[in-house]
Length: 498
Image (cartoon, rainbow, N blue to C red; front, side):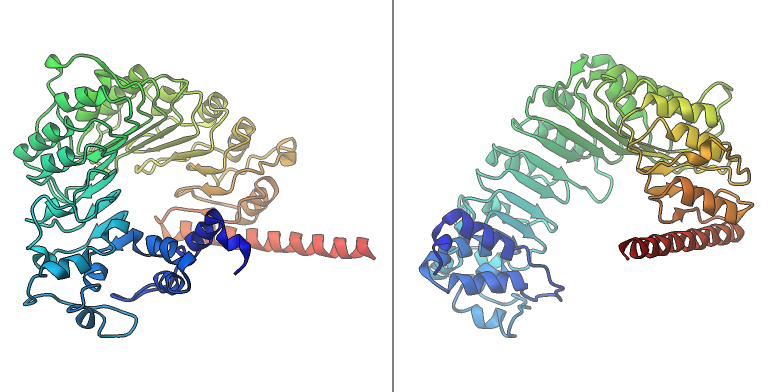
């Protein structure tokens, strides 16, 4: 054996690489990585422990552990290299079989529970038994009714739950070191469930990230006192509006990421108006309905509750098209974000988000965001294009780092002047022109080829066969120009070499 393999750090790196081997699996098939680790574990004493630790570290269900039980092994592995097994009618494990089952349980660090039809085999275990004493991550697709206590561990850091379960308080109480809690309820939660959720959240002391249905003010107040909390995501139906009259203004000093997926923006506006997020870097909201009045209130609340010098990423999305156009002729969403000078990404995709957007406003916006990397302005309402090529390239001069742009372009008007023709924006790689109409396809292809050399092809909208066909033709011509240029460079290089 090479002496390098006696260095534990080197050996662990090699085994960790083996553990990343990916292969396509059918149901029940054992992965190549697990087979390789099992082989390494039987090679020599030096390899045994580190290989076994990795082999058992990540478990998808408890079947592999049940496979260590002598009585069950031939039932589980009746086909070479795979296990497919149903435990209905099988007697529970006896005392000595429990010891076989637990033989490698102390090595498990991450556990996914995909279904619960094997848990009756563990019915003889005492209630206060921790099967996995060093478990760090627990993900439940199916809730282990009656057996949850077996899977809790005082070392647990991450927990994924498929619903707000009556045992939620038990989880957060037993797992005092919980840092990452995700609760993705598949349907609307009841008022009692939301009350249980908020009561349980107030028992968490070390949360770093939280994803859950809407919380009440008491839970938000508790979260503001957690110095460890960095990210909060709220997803679900809001049953009861927040009572702002009984809420004390609260500062969330360390939260950097805030996300909402709700029906309307009312809940979000209430939270933002009554809170401060001085460290916020990322804000995202998806609303089923976003009337213009709510949008304006949201913009003002966002400006009020954050420090303009910290916010870097903003996403606001709503696809409902039953929203009337704002009556105020001066209103435009983009101007509300000009003060966020550190923006890296901005995505606005809601009705009328591009109203009154023109060359002048695009230039003003990109001049205000010198660090912008991605700008997506996606109005679900089809309106006339007002950004011309000349206006686009004038604005792009202010954004040397921009790599992604989604905006409706006036491709009917190829208004490129002599000075603009010498300009190249080499960072832009993704250009989505939405549903832009086009006149001279060859001219547009040449403009893109000359001025946006990193754009391989243009993304376009799906409305209108003639629009799709026109942009397909532009992309074909663009590829032809790039191929000819590459061939010319290759010939020139060969000539120079001679």
